[in-house]
Picture (tube, rainbow, N blue to C red):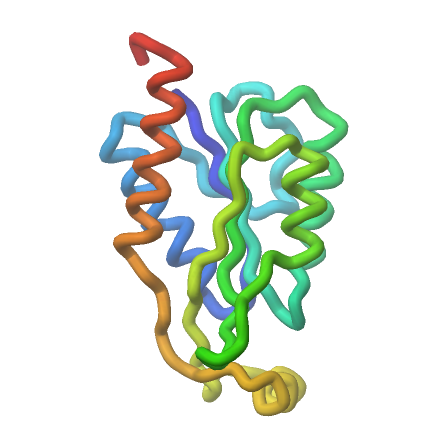
Length: 166
């Protein structure tokens, strides 16, 4: 079983989620390629795609949107999507972004999950700090490793059921 995991972020939180998913997939016996969205030019050899993006100002990163556009024109295996963030104060709901909703539709994705991320205000650019200050978001590490690992296990279980003998 070959799985492609392709993500983009700015400060490492999204990549850390992808690395943990990759570890779970490999532990389950899958071969995994982790690639940046810009480097994906063919998906024909994969049995599954996992695509993720950091969320900034309620948008996915352009590189991930570009990957979705490319993959949507190709024959492709089942796709799972995830968003890292957004981080909002506890009194505001977190909604799926329009980019995620579009990707689910364009790729006929099996599912989309939004995972809490990590925000270290010290690592932000001046512009990002201004957006952060106005957003109501809270700085901190909110990644839920159990949630991430369980989702990766769900993906493996689904692939195993659909491909007996794997």
